Amino acid sequence: MFLLVPVPTSHVPDPGLTMPFELFIGLRYLKAKRKSTFISIISVISTAGVALGVMALIVVLAVMTGFEEDLKEKILGTNAHVVVIRNGIPMDDYRQVMQSLTAMPGVSAATPFIYNQVMLSSGKNVSGVVLRGIDVPSDRQVTRLSRSIVEGNMDSLDPKVSDGAAALPGLLIGKELAKHLNLLVDDKINVISPMGNITPLGMIPKMKTFRVSGIFNTGMFEYDSTLAYVSLSQAQLFFDLGDTVTGIQLRVKDVYHTGELARSINQSLGPGYSARDWMQMNRNILFALKTEKVVMFVILTLIVLVAAFGIASTLFMVVMEKTRDIAILKSMGATGNSIMKIFVMEGLIIGVIGTFLGVASGLLVALNLEPIIDVIQKITGQNFFSKDIYYLDHFPSLVVPSDVALISITAVLISFIATLYPAWQASRMLPAEALRYE
Image 1 (cartoon, rainbow, N blue to C red):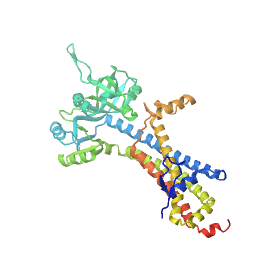
Image 2 (image 1 turned 135 degrees about the horizontal axis):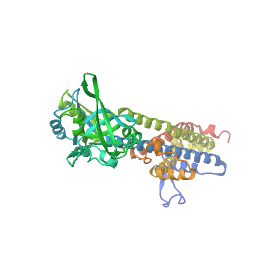
Image 3 (image 1 turned 135 degrees about the vertical axis):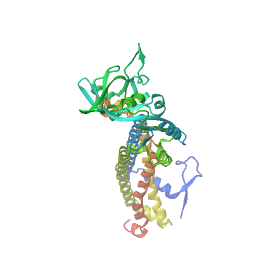
Image 4 (image 1 turned 30 degrees about the vertical axis):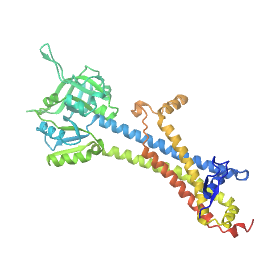
């Protein structure tokens, strides 16, 4: 049964406006009286607990999402979206395969590549790396390697003839690899392949001198310390591959549906070829990031759960204090459902206000996280996120609206569940027993 009570003009501008009496009484119970100040303080603490939990969830998930997107951008900046190789042998018909692949829906560009392991030697410094041969014009359309170069350029990978003699072929190396080998642009470096020429004395490694034509910085230590690039023609010449390549790299329009495209390519090209997308090649690290995000959400939800216990405790004390009011309302005709709604609405008001404050403060912090951290570091004199250690040029934070909506719904739902038992206990109270000792 719903009773509509006129709300006094001190509460709303329109004297004729009415609201369900359950909501009206629930709002009245939230107001502090002299004898119920302690309950009001607990209500404020419960609201603050919900707000802190929601704020922590929003900030942490924004940081986790920011790290995930930053990592994906770095992976996609160095690698192609889809890689197609020929099983077991080099690809000699790569030009025809490239034409058929670029004609497929969703494919933006394609470029051939050669992939092999070599040793780099400079003076007394030696390092094992992965050497990639790339076609510079088409590689610019597929990967972001050209944007990662901090010194030198890609155009000087192919040797140029000057004074009747060919200059040394160019080689691109990563920033960390350049530090390790103590190399600068225009320095000479020896590339050694264990798969050399067979002689009566056995296998002799093949060696060729290159010139450091550029240094790149992808932002990932693994790539910057283990990758080196030469032109496609120089790689074919050095590894004696003739007019063959290791595979083809593809750039697609939708990076989150590359799995479907890879399956279509495998069906189209047949069993002799294999296509893998960037998600398959980086499955472990992407799964780890997703799992960590889910675990952090579950752990931080416990903060909201603890605040929900505060809401339940507040309602239990309100029920104990309002025993006489409950008995009078029931004597006047209020049903058990109406009494239950009063306390459910009271708890929901605490949860909704706490959620709103938490969302507002969480968005404020998450959207201004980097300036806030800078201020904290200046005040404390501590560098919490050193670029040398964490290999970050900025502190990533990305707010996803769906995450904010999920957090808000979860917080309100937990608050609602916390109100059910004390509200149910209030609804079961008998008027005669409630007024017996009054």
